[in-house]
Image: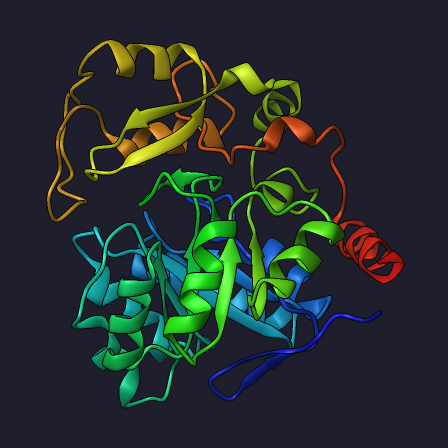
Length: 313
C-alpha cells in the first residue's frame, strides 16, 4: 500500500504529509526543505520573524529544495497581513493560518493564486472557509500542540468536516505513526499534519536542550496554559508554565506583536527562550503525544519509518 497524493490548489505533494509550522523558529528553512524533499509539504513558521528574515528563510528553502514549501502564521499577529504579502511576493507555495480566523485573509492570496489554508476545529468553520475561498483546511483536534480551538479529538471532527466540504481536509493532532495516518485517511482526511514528530527531528531548529526536554517528557507532564492570544495552549510542564498557571507573568516590555493580547505573559519571548534552549524560563509548546517519542530522527528516517508502517497495513 502506497501513500495517496495530496493536491492543494495546483500544488501536488507525492506524500500527503504537511509538517507543522512550529514557532518561534523551530520550523525554519532546513526543516521545511527536508520535508519538501521527501515529497511532503514543508512549512516555515513565520510568526515572530521580521520581513527580511522571512524572505531569507524562503530563499534558503528554495535553494535547498524544489518541493512544496509554505508558511504558517498566526492570524492573531499584528503584522499578519504584512507577513502574508511578503511571503507571497517571495514566491511561497501556500499559506497556513492558525491561532484565529480572518475572513479577509482569502483575498490576500486570490490575485497571485496562492492557496490559503486555514486551521479549523469545526465542520462549521470548515464550511465557511470553503465558501470564502480556502483551497484546503487543516482540521486540528485536541491532540495538537500549541494553540487549540477545541477539546474534541480530531478523529471525531474529520468525518464531520468530510461531509461538510469538498476541498481537501488535512487532519492534525496526535499523528505519529503510519497507522495513525491510515486511520485518518480512512475517516475521510486527504492528508495529515505532523508537528511533534518533526519538532524533535534532526533538522528542527530547536536547541539540543529543548529536544532533550521533549524526549524526557512524560504523559503527566503535558498540560494546558492560557495563552495571551486568548486560546488555551498545550505545553510541557516547566517552571515557567507552572508560574503562568498560578497567575500572570506580565512582560517588562511589550512589542505589541498581537492584535489583542491578554498580557498575562509575552508568548513570543517565552517561546523564543525555549527554542534557544532555556527550558526553565521558556514556554515549551507540544502535542499531547510527545511523550511517545523516544528518539531524535532525521526527516529522511521519519519518512522511511512512516512509509514502512503504512505499507505494512
